[in-house]
Amino acid sequence: MADGAVQSEGRRGGIVIKDDWPGYSLDLFSYPAHYSGDLDCVYIPHGVIMDRTERLARNIMDDLGDHDIVVLCVLKGGYQFCADLVDRIKALSRNSNHTIPMRVHFIRLKSYVNDQSTEDLHILGAEDLSSLNGKNVLIVEAIVDTGKTMKTLLKHVEAAGPKMIKVAGLLVKRVPHNAACLPDYVGFEIPNRFVVGYALDYNEYFRDLNHICVISENGKMKYKI
Image (cartoon, rainbow, N blue to C red):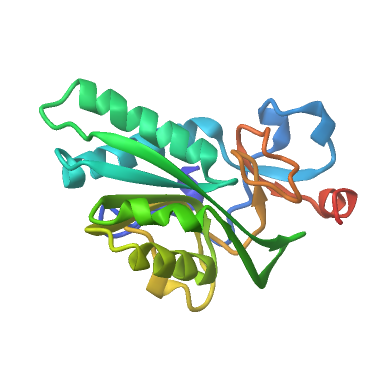
């Protein structure tokens, strides 16, 4: 992946994957046979995701160690990243002078139909955000693209009156006008390609992929609604 990625400036900037990165051949990895023909390539292998998640956990520990925080997991796509990130923070807490007492709260957002983001954003769980009042909140999201969804979510969270808000995003897409909603902790900055796997879906399919992959046109047509 060295030829397709560069380290961005600043430790929170994320690993930048170049526009011309073709990904890895599917033949090099194991993936569910029922998705044969539905994927173009493995874009980010599972092992690389895990290593980057551990680095993000260390950054969060450095910044938030000894703070009592509420992790706000954005479902459905963020559940795997959130689970792995929390596990690594807990492991670091067990072997460090700094500890982060954590509680986990869940909220569900839905704004996609097929591979297109819509203006119709559904938020489930927003009525329970009053429990965030006066708390240190870490929002964990799998992917940020246009930033519209994150901007709307931040407004709801801010209205609850938290003491502090930080955002961890595994993926940030390079699309126009998303600079205002960049996460505080970024895993990877990627081109504007539709990716699936590692709990990211296309109409509820592909969540069972370990790797982050690029869906093929055949896959889009096969699972289109």
